[in-house]
Image (tube, rainbow, N blue to C red; front, top):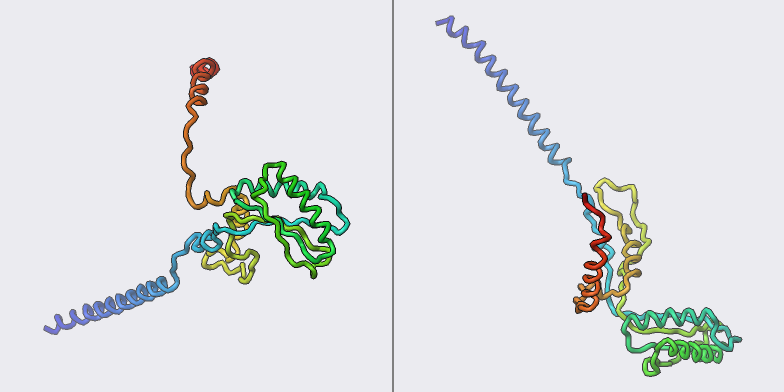
Length: 235
């Protein structure tokens, strides 16, 4: 009987050691899991989308151009003519109904501005501007001195970025979360908005135009008569 008891003690001791080791390993595993859950986080490539941070807004706004006129000018200059030509092109493409010519009143160059405006309007009429499309008005410019300008303007649908670029209010070295900085993409969005010829294209696709049946037949006949002979051999 005493032999049996002596044999049981070592087994009990080994079992206790095994249990202690199991508890230690379990504690290590639980500690490592807790540490992993604490330190681990999912990193996105670009969580902040620049298109939502700096959206392009399509809205109706004023399109304008200022003509600098000195008090000694008797007629429009070559520079005025080029500016008027370019501005009328924008007006015609926009589909606007009225082009406004706003003259200074009470300034030193009031008379010169009136003479230049007559030449500018006459020049745009040679380009296709109708007399019913022009309105002439005045603004008080007594405080402007010799710097009062003749303003050409019209209302049209334009594309612009709502946010203001060049805001550097954050440390660009803080990139641990792998997010774009606030000013990222602002200039690109601005450039894209300015390059769009028709801002309405941002709102939806244009409708399909009718096919030119005559042109289509000419292209097909030309290919049948001349195109096949000019194709390189596949052999």
